[in-house]
Image 1: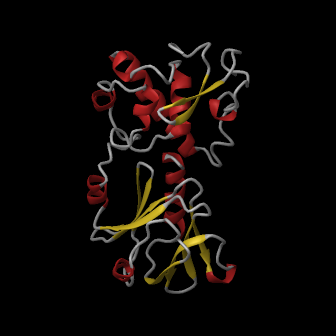
Image 2: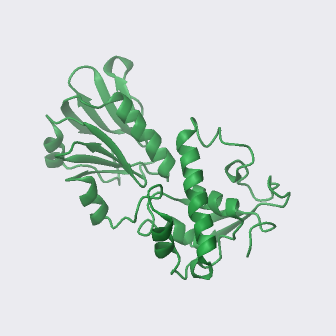
Length: 261
C-alpha cells in the first residue's frame, strides 16, 4: 500500500491541478470490492469546490473548510491524476470528478485495493478511523509514549496506523535498517535513546522521500529500498539481506548490522 510519501505526492498533484474549480459531476466505474461514495454522497459534492488538498498519514483529503471532503485511500497501485477532457480518460479510473470546463480528476486503481469516502472534516475522519498522529508531525516524546509500551515487534508497531499514521512496510524497514535495529525486537525492550533514534530516522527518511522527485527510484543507492531482495549484499556493511515474515508482513533487513537480528 502506498505510504505517506506517495500520498503526499498525490496531494501535491491535486493541489497543482484541481483546486478552486466547481464540481459538475462525479462518476464511479467498476469499483468491485472498493468502498466508494454513495449517490447521495456524490450529490453533496456537486456544486462545491476543492479549495484545499490535505494529507494525513496515507490518506489524501480534498475539500474546503466547511466540507464535505472527498477522502482517498490509494491502495497498492492507486494514483490521483488530473487531466483535461481533450486528453481522454485514463484507464482504470474508478472515480472521476468532472469540473466545469475541461478539467477532470481521476482516482485510478487497477487492482481495486483502495477506497474513497466522503467525510465531514479531516478531523472527523481521523477520529472515526482511530488513526494515530501523522508520522511526520508527531514529536519525539509522544512517539516514545505511543510506541514504547508495546510488546509487539518494533516493525509491527511502526506499521500500526492506530499508533502512528503513515508508515508501512517499505519505510518501516528503511527506518530500522538506518538505525541498526532488528525488526523483531519488542518495542518495550527499547530505551528512550533508541526510540529517539527511530523517531529521528523515520522523519528524516519520510521527508527525504517526500522531497525527492520520483522517489523511491531516485533515492541514494545505499538505501535499503534498492536492495530488498533475499541474498542481496548490504550496501552498509557488506552483509547479506534477509527476508522474514513478521506480523504477517515481509521484513527485509541485514542481520549483520541490525542489532538483535
